[in-house]
Image (cartoon, rainbow, N blue to C red):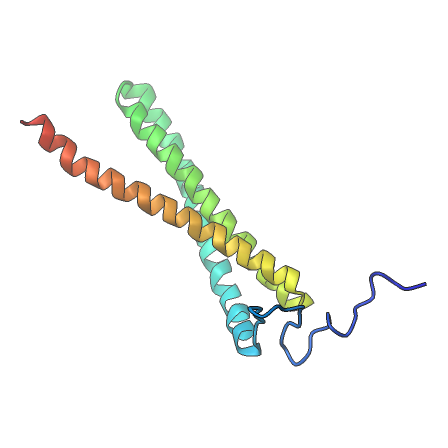
Amino acid sequence: MENPYQTTESQAPSGGVFQQQQGANGISATSIAQSHLYSSKGWVRFISVLMFIYFAFMILGLFGMFALVSQVGGVAILGVLLMLVMTVVLFMLANSLSKYSTAIGRTEISRNPGDLETAIMHQMKFWKLCGILTLIALVMALLSMFVPALAFR
């Protein structure tokens, strides 16, 4: 009886390069590419930890904003809502980078192409969120320039 969990020759890493079934357009990570990926893990983790710390400060700031709203009321609630949205977005970015760093570590240990795919997926999610946020910021900047101009016509 054949063991379905046993690594075959074509699946085992060789010479620091992920070996995988490839078509004509297949790609494999060279040992240099792997080295660069593994070297980035510490920096990715560092930035994610800083973002989590900043997130904690924003939570504390939200408590201050809630106190301000209770004193002032009215329009100050918009500031709280904006800060709440920014806090949630910051958490999403930090969490995405943290997952990316963890996936890089798993890839480094296992040398499994599936773990590499997971790491790249987490990186893609981070940059997708960054792209969406940049687009939103651009639209808001354009609106902040043109809406007041229209109001004074």
